[in-house]
Image 1 (cartoon, rainbow, N blue to C red):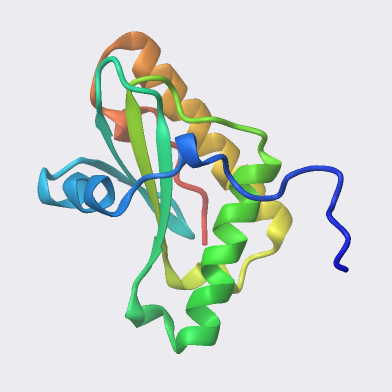
Image 2: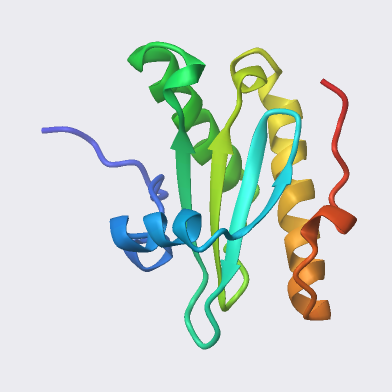
Length: 137
């Protein structure tokens, strides 16, 4: 029998974007900002709990590389111990440098992105790019 880890490693279901919600963010042209190793795409959903999703395009490489990139994004998000702000759906889209940068640097970028998103939501403006600090590659 497999042992269970003492702390859950997956996101709770109420924090994950469903397929239809995931697609709606891209179809409705959600707000977008670029970081060195990922893009952040988000949209407001007033009155709804915040949800998060992770995407990696085929440009990144074969399935093995894409899966690794997606796992790195999820783990960096989880280690940042963050939940999306209430009323905001967020998708992190992996970029090529995601597989080459150190994991520590990825965590810093993820925290920067979430702090910038928090500031934007508190201010009520939809311009995350103004608050985002794009680190060097």
